[in-house]
Length: 328
Image (cartoon, rainbow, N blue to C red; front, side, top):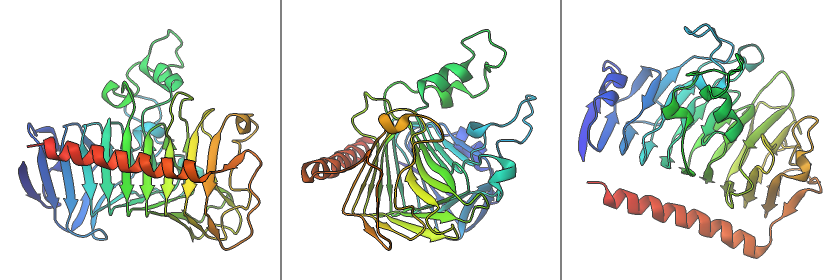
């Protein structure tokens, strides 16, 4: 595997675009003020220091785009990954907008690839920090220009970012993810293991960690295993673990600790929808600073279901290890 050692003085996007083989990129300490799109397969980026190797950008949903429209959620990313088998380690990715009320959504990391791994990274933003593709099918149609409706945007999102047949398996280990509203969202089979989910202050006085949009056909959705849901300034009892972005969104929480900012009901149905009838939210062995009173549609996982969630994670990890061993 090819290796490169880079610093903030290098044109990181130009180097990424020139890659023709599996490559490990080592980033020195410093701030890389770049908006990056990792298109090549099998790119590994490793920072020198998690706290001081920082990739930052500042796009936001209500910002005017050169094409005449607004950026919208999905064009605001600081880093976008569409290459298969990529990984990020030991660094921080920031979307530096700090007022989602005015700026709208501001994505730090967007991952649209069949297989992805992150370890020991920080993701910092406010609203919609981490997008885990695929897109919901209705949004693929909306943004790909498949109709004559002028409200639909042909080329609004590059097809390499919008389209992905099949599913995505994503693993996040020992990561810190910061946000306020729906700050982990999408349709991937994604495992968050020993991560810290940190809710920041929001003047709207409410928050939601996960906003899943999984298809009913997907057996596995989001799994939070051994994670800590921590208060970084949110109002007491104002944050829900999850709300369904689309019907049948799936989230499981096992062996997690909850701060007192987590609402005792745990889950929200998403405004005035009826997604409380279709959401697949469940939990087991939660440790909370306050008494919990989960909504009746949030299930308690059986021992067998918990074992199956761990089996899913181990299978995903083995898939990642096999992929690594196959890359020369």
